[in-house]
Image (cartoon, rainbow, N blue to C red; front, side, top):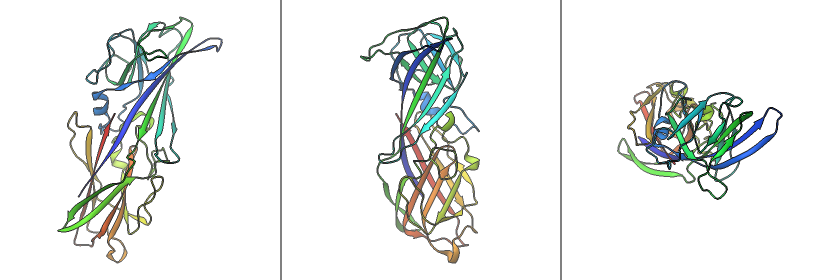
Length: 308
C-alpha cells in the first residue's frame, strides 16, 4: 500500500555585523528563494548528508531563479561557528522553524555585499537557497561590512507540515481500506523516535534510513503533537528506499513486516507510526484493520514530497 504526504519549506535571512568591541549593527533581513537543486538535495540518502551546512556571500545582482546553483559573483563562504536551534510549534497550524547561524572571521567578508546563499559547501556552488540582499522596502541593495567586523548570517527555515488529514481508500487483498495519514509529534524537534526533524542539524530527510522505525498496533491516531495509541510492535523487515528522480521533490520509503511481526492474538493492525529518523514522523490509521498473521508479510509505502 502507498500513502502520500507533503511538506512545505521556506526561508529567511538576517545579516548583522559586530566589531571587536562588541558593537553590533543590523544590516538586513529578507526572504530567500529555495533552489531546485536544494530541493533535490533534501532527497539525499547518504549517511549524515548535509543540506544546510555553509553560508556564502557575493557581489552579484542577478535576480534569483529556481534553476540557479550558485551565487552570480561569489566572494567568500564559511562553515565557521555553525550553530542551529529549533522552535517547534505548540498548536495548530503546527508551523515551526529551524534556525541556522554562521559567523565569518573578522574582516573575511569585508566589502560591499549584495547576495547571499546557504548550502552544503563553503566554496562556490552547491546552494540550497539564494537571495539578493534587500532593503526594508524589499528592493535589492548592498551592505557594507567593515574590515574590523565579524559578519553573522542567520537563516531561518520555516517548516509547514500538512494541515489536513490525507484520507485515501486503497485495496488491500481485495478489501477497500480507508487510510488516514497525518504528521506525528510535530511539537518535538529532535532526531529521536516519533519526532519531527525536517533538516534537523542541516541534514537531509533521508540521511539515517538505517535507524528508522515503523511501529504498528491496534490503537487509534494521536493528535498532530503525539503518536498513535498502542503502537507497540516494531516491524523487523527494515526499510527500503525508492529511487529519486531529480525535479520530482518526492521520494518513497517502504517499511517491511516479516511473517513473525504479528500483534498478540493476530489482532488486525489499525494504526502505524512511521518514523524516518532525522527527517519526519507520520501516523496512519487503517479501517478496517489490516489482517496480519504468520502467513502474511506486510509492506507499508510512504511517499514524502516537499515544496517551496
